[in-house]
Image (cartoon, rainbow, N blue to C red; front, top):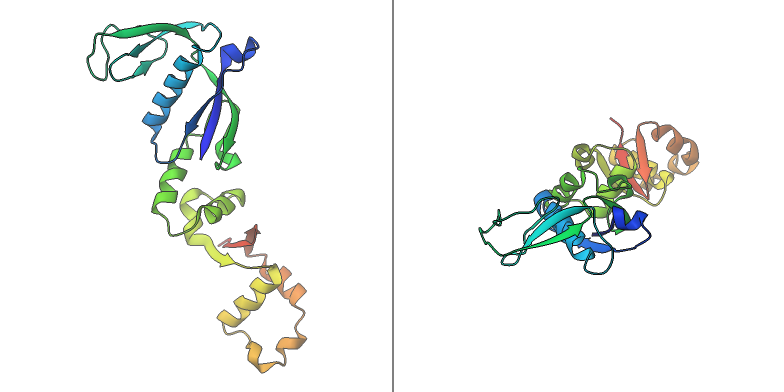
Length: 200
């Protein structure tokens, strides 16, 4: 997963100074520092920023919108100062559900999503399907039923699993209007990209 951002001031002035942040395994604080570094480094390429910012030459810690005399991270006195932007805008993203990306930044829910992926038995595809179907992140695992080729396949399996009917009997299994059965069953379930979830 990654996201590509532009410094907003440079962008509105006609300069594209993109920087990409790899999102796998980073927390919110690390993400904030990656943005600061991206904003700082972007201005080596072209453009002038609207705030003075500082970077430690020892540990590379960046503070946007402030000139530090001593690095708040390592205590080093060797500080580089540069004019940078202090705001950014999203250019592109990859592997992140669209619901978790806004025009200017990631949603704060992204980090809960990232934690969920590390701690769930479900694949990212299922979690993404649950989000797209409108479920709260914390409910997806509980509401997930499984993957089926169609509503009819889901209805047939549901009938078998609940003992409502036995396919091996042939009749009356072969006489059932499975289109109608599936339509009725789907009042209590929802689906996204063949992943089925309970609504109850």
